[in-house]
Length: 317
Image 1 (cartoon, rainbow, N blue to C red):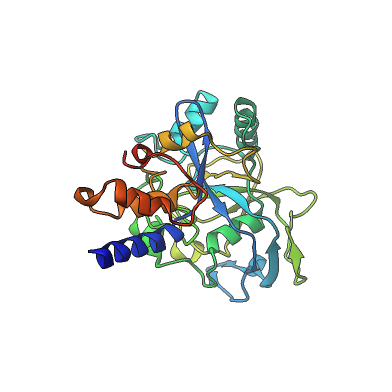
Image 2: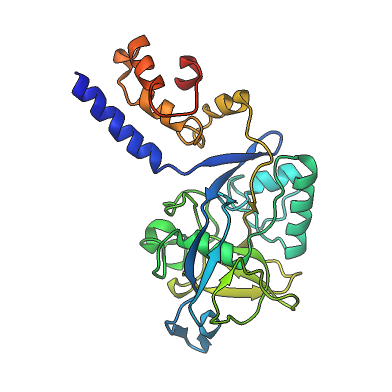
């Protein structure tokens, strides 16, 4: 019996260690889930030559070393129509059959207005668009190939799509726990478009001025050739399209959620077993079959390495 318990706990802890660290931006009626992206160094761009008709990927060259020097937080999904509606009071999207569809038909300026409004209605986060380097680093999530997984499993694109966008989070995430980094909608980035340099850089911010802003990730009607982590696109700031949306990033929350917020979050599947501050303890407890739970098992879980001490009832919602 004890061997069974140890095995269950060990498996649960392994799973917990692979679960992304989540937090949230409080929109009032709903929450926008954020994923912690660890600092690191990666190869940005590609040296591969990719072409289709008159198009060639020369702006993706050369592959060069980029360091993201600090952890940051990124929206686990592209911003949805429900979230946009809650913040802005309208829905500009062409496709609007489901509130969990990504918001689209938003210009770069529209997105800046959303960010400013969101920063004014809550104080835990200072949100913005990702830099192009942050976006590609987050999309790759430690991978070095063209995609972070088999394309049909991770992205909505021409070969597996019907006629429009799909609700967020229906495909598999990458290793950081981010969904739809490729496909569904292009995603605005903060940078002005400009050529790459071969010189290694730290936290690049793009050009200081320009005419076009970066969009990344491909979209629902794109061919597979455009559904690549290195693919660069660019658009005018006042351009909107049913194929362009966005996701947010932030350097980190100004304070951690309260205990009440965290335990309330356990009723939300997006938070269940994912909060880094409580995940280890809860993963231990819920790994045990319910008939076997009780004070002795609870005491065993409380003795696991963790900085969390809470009540049993918090963990079995």
